[in-house]
Image (tube, rainbow, N blue to C red; front, top):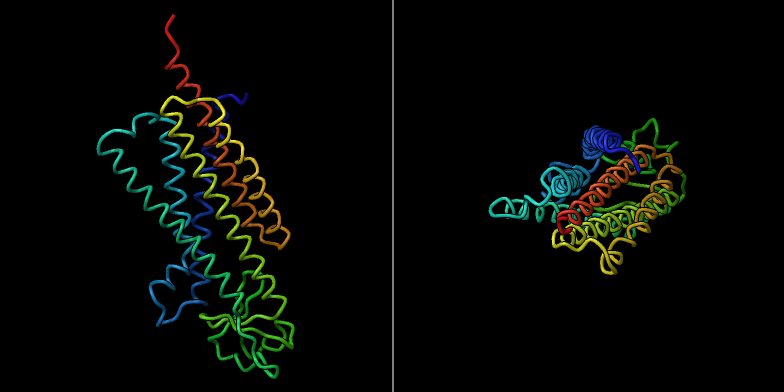
Length: 274
């Protein structure tokens, strides 16, 4: 077993790195928003453009609650106003995360319904500075000096509602990446749901048995799916996404360690005194 001191160091190192990654993603959202938002963009478009930032804030709050519930404040967040406050913030977090899920579905639908441009279309016709070319999550402003070199025609597609164009290879790539985003988001939701159930079961003194095992075991497969998706992103050269995903797995493994320690404390508290 890993000594408690090393476990704490691992946990807080991972949390610190996740916080650094958060600011990197905020910067990326700001950069991408410059290509996808305009003066007439609605609040929904703004929420979609900053979906990663919103999502990460919600995840940070959730992991903080898991840390408190299974760590320093184990058993002390269940009473009175404190409990109601925690529940209210949790609900807001899940609303934000579900917003990410719906945004992933919406983005996938946009890619699947991309409009094929006329066969005679030339990217140089879109080089007015308002259109961008999408490839492997990156946006490049279409300008007169690059309109003949980016993309591989003759087929090009417009992705509504943003002023974005891509070629057939870029569109296929975007659809696959959108599916992985959706699958990754659902896998994390299922892991959090399992952890929520486990915490409630342990709080009620259930620290073993078939029911707990049925909730716990599927998480191994879900973590494997998430790591597999992260490896796919790395194969596309998206090493920041890979690194971030591995950090989140590390963060939740720290929570798994907390759940194990919490289980032992509950068992010890219910053991008859000698």
